[in-house]
Every structure is written in C-alpha cells, then in structure tokens.
Image (cartoon, rainbow, N blue to C red; front, side, top):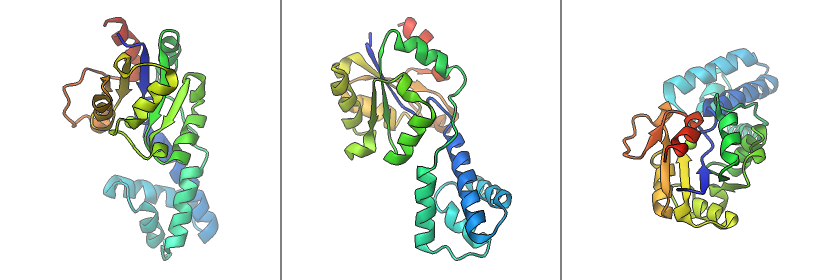
Length: 217
Ligand SMILES: [Mg+2]
C-alpha cells in the first residue's frame, strides 16, 4: 500500500492544450502589436498549423505566412514570452475534489518535466501548492523523466522510501519509465494523447478515478 503519491502535471491534472491555447492567444496578441496584424487571424493560423504540422516551428511559419521574415532573435523572443506568459488554466473535471480527498490520506508530490519557468507558471496558475507538499521540476535537476532522479528527489524531500510511493501520470514511457527506474509502482491515467502507447500498467480513465482505485487496493 503506497503512503505517497508522486503525480505528473500535464495531461494528468489538466489538459495541456489549455496551456497551448493560452500561449497562442498571448503570442498572437504580441505579433499583432509588433507587426500590425489581426490577433484573431494570427491565432487561427497558429491553431491551423498545430493541427496540420504538430509542434515545432509554428511561430516561424506563422510569421512567414503573414509576410514577415522569421529572424532567429524575433522567434527566440516569442518563444521566451510563450514560456513565461501567465496562463489561464483549470483542472480536468473532478481533479480538485480528488486532490482534496487524497491529501487527507497520502503525502503528495508533483513531479513534472518541461521548461522550468513554464512549468512553474502552470503550477502557480493552478494554485497546485495548495495540495502538494513538494514540487519537483525534473529539468531543473537535469534529469527529466524517464530518469529516476525526479521521483527519487521527491521521496527524499518527503522522507519516504521509493517502494512506498506510487507514480501517477498519463505517459507510460516517461512516468511509467521513471517509476520503474526508481523502484516504485505506476498508475496510468489514460488520457487520449498516449492512448496508442502500449503498457501493461494498471490504469484508470481520469485522475478523478484515482481515489476509488486506491481504496480498492
Ligand atoms: Mg503528462
């Protein structure tokens, strides 16, 4: 029986697309101001590129589409502003109630990959410090999941043994891999993004189902 839950952030507690949408809206406003464009048109174009090409060079290609040369210093500035904008975010349905319930029984740590300034703003936007004793930014350690350093650092900060911790997250490769490497269990949250990734890990449909799953252990 675990005493401690190490919980992933993006696509486990909230829909990461919310952050992308919020960032696109912010950057569209920036581009509109800098280059005298329509923020709505720029935003729509970025969403179209995301759907068509996926992530990567959306800002470069959007500038090009509006006839602006995507100079590296301009793109770098936009990326920095995207990562440091104050996002407007909300949890998936039922997450708040589930965290309230889990907090009464378990030690909770948030263990997240990603650009540190960006992840810190997500944590602040969700007021996650209300539920988590410890927040570990794996990239700050230089060892993103599936490396075990993040989960192990969380255990150390909480004073618990890895075997008494359970990693909870949507990505079987990073979250599941880190749990395995750190010698702890893993519970998969089956959000759509990694639905095609095969895993024999126990799973629940959404984070809201975690309390019932743990009561059944
Ligand atoms: Mg995730």
